[in-house]
Every structure is written in C-alpha cells, then in structure tokens.
Amino acid sequence: MDWTAWRDEFPIFRNKRYLNTCSLGALSRRVRAAQDRFFDEWEEHGATAWYSTWMAALDGLRERFARVIGASKEEVALAPSVSVALSSVASCLDYAGRPKVVFSELDFPTVAYQWAVKANAQRVIVPSRDGISVPPEGYEAAIDDRTAAVATSHVFYTSGAIQDLRRIANAAHRHGALAIIDAYQATGQLPTDVHEADVDVLISGGLKWLLGGTGIALMYVRRERLAELKPTITGWFGNRFQFEFDPRRFDFWDDARRFELGTTANAAVYACSAGLDLVLEIGVEAIRARTTELGNDLIDRLTDAGFAVRAPRDPASRAGIVMIPMKEPAAVVHALAERGILVDYRHDRLRASPYFYNTPEDNAALVDAMRSRAS
Ligand SMILES: Cc1ncc(COP(=O)(O)O)c(C=O)c1O
Image (cartoon, rainbow, N blue to C red; front, side, top):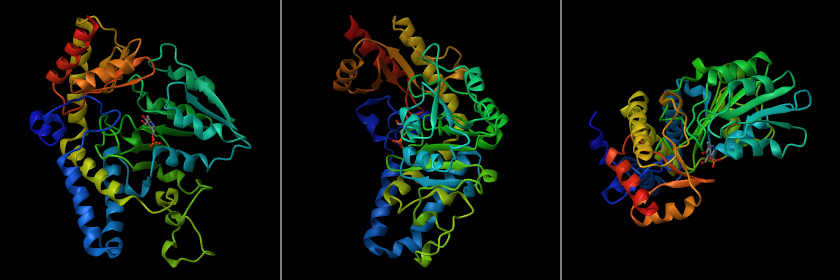
C-alpha cells in the first residue's frame, strides 16, 4: 500500500501535522466532493430529490456501515448522534424488574448520562485499577439477574485500550442482560464483527475513524433482538406507515429503522457515506496494521525522549490513541497548534492519535516539538 498517496486525499497535510483523528477525522477531497454533490442535487431538484436520490442514500449509508461491522443493513439505524442512539436504546428497557445498568468509569460520560436521568435505573460503575483498562472480571462480578444492560466501550477514549466484546457480551447474556457497545473510538480503525462478538447493540458515528464529519451516528441492533426492543421515544421515521401521514396509524418497522426518529441531516449522510467508502476501499485490516505501526513508532519516540506514556503495553490491546500524562496539557496543545501540530487533551493527558494518513515524520515532529518545549 502506498500510504503517502492516500495522504494527498487530505489537504490538511499541505501545511499541518494532523494527529487528532480520535477527536475528528481529517477532511478528504472525496467527502468535500460528496457535499458538493448533495448541494447540487438540492439546488437542482429541491424536495424531489428525497424520492429520486436521498431515501436511497440513507439506505446506502446503512449498507456501508453494515459492511464495516459485519452486519446486514436491516440491522442498522441512523441517528444524529451517539447520545441520541443511546437514548433510544435506553428507552426500550424495563427498569422495574431489572433496574441495574453496568458501565465502567472509563467510558465516555454520555454513556452513563443516559441512566443518570432515569429515576428507576440504578447505575453500577466498574472501576479501573490503572486508568487504562477495566478488567473483564469487573463486569462479570457486577452483572446479575437484576441487570438490564451492560453499556461500555469497544475502545476507551482516554487510553486507546481495546475491550474484549465477546467476553462482555457473554457475561451479559448469562444473566439475560443486553450488551450495548459504544464503538465510536473503534469503528474504522479496528476490525469488527458484531455477530462474532455477539453484542446486542453497537453504536458508532462518522466523526472520527470513519472520516465522515459531524451530524451522523449509526446503530447496529442484532436481528434477533429487534422485535423485543420497542423504543419509547420515536418519530415518523420509525413508523412503517411513514408516508400515510396518519396520526392514528403507528407501528414500528420490523428492521432497525424502528430506532430512527426524524428527518436526517443529508449533508452528513453524504459526508459519512464518502468517508465509509474510503475506509472500505483501503480496508479495515490494512488500516489497523498501519495504525498499529504508527502507534508503536510514536510510543517508541516518546519513550526515547523521556516522556511517560499511558497506554496498554501490548500493541494487540491498544488502538490508535496515545496518551501522554502532563501537568498542563491544554497549554502544550495550544503551543503545538501554533507550530502547526494538531493534537488534543483530556483530563491530565495530551492525546495524539495517528491514523493511516500520518507518517513517522508526523510523529517525529510532535515529539521534537514537545521535547524542545520541555527543555
Ligand atoms: C467514545 C465516545 N462516545 C461518544 C462520544 C460522543 O458522541 P455524540 O456527541 O455523538 O453523542 C464521543 C465523543 O467524542 C466519544 O469519544
């Protein structure tokens, strides 16, 4: 694979060292062209484009996402954000008999917030010993017959640690609970087979490793679970009789569209589809190999330069997120941005996330700049 050729697809590299995909994937020429196509259609056809093109584009997006995670498109719903998708799933559960929802202290907080606002739900937080990962036994001990769901991450946003989805799903299923996975930091960069992993729900979105920008999230719901999951927040897109416009007539779609609510943001649909096309064309296995190589390279350079790194030791257990603990990461991030090196921070750590379009030279520039600032 000629990785530097792919770099030309992303104009930001003309004058920046962009190492922040875990916040926002870089804009590609293809995604920009897809936006233009959407605006051209809007300009030329107005609302007619819904019937001629846009409804099919929604289906095309569901189908692309399904391919990336090993699902079928009938198991995929569109949502405007991961938070909305989580809310929709959380609205299906009956907390009277099963009040407990298990998650970990390292999950992105929007996961926990779904249940913080449900008076009859009881939150059980599995702790991490090292701030990097959560032992699977922690979930196994926390889940019981009063657990409605375990809701946790495929990859932790503050450490890049990869969780064993199959083991978490098994622990949930032994007690009749659902396994709900926030895969926002995984999909695109990490090979995923949702059927093999046996999870019930997996939610991701376009923003980061799928290169598709803001305004769109995607939700997988396992086929066998669809009939029993009936959201109590809904809208006309969830209604199989959508185009009868009859307030008396509502019934859920049989497929995952039952989780959809209202009109989609079609610019986002086009952007995300184009991002997914890039990911599918390159292939997630190849992306994973390249990203692992770059992550290892960055960790080696940081270690040689005397920086501590907070990440799983085993490359097989970590995705493309590298955390560097420091006192005032915000100031460092701003100083680096002034030198054209774009990274991010969370809590007390600087966060760099090399993706397939980065190079060892990007890593070297980051470490050199950090070293010269530290000395
Ligand atoms: C792992 C993870 N989950 C969820 C979110 C937030 O998703 P949304 O804003 O689409 O609700 C983020 C945002 O960065 C994230 O990193």
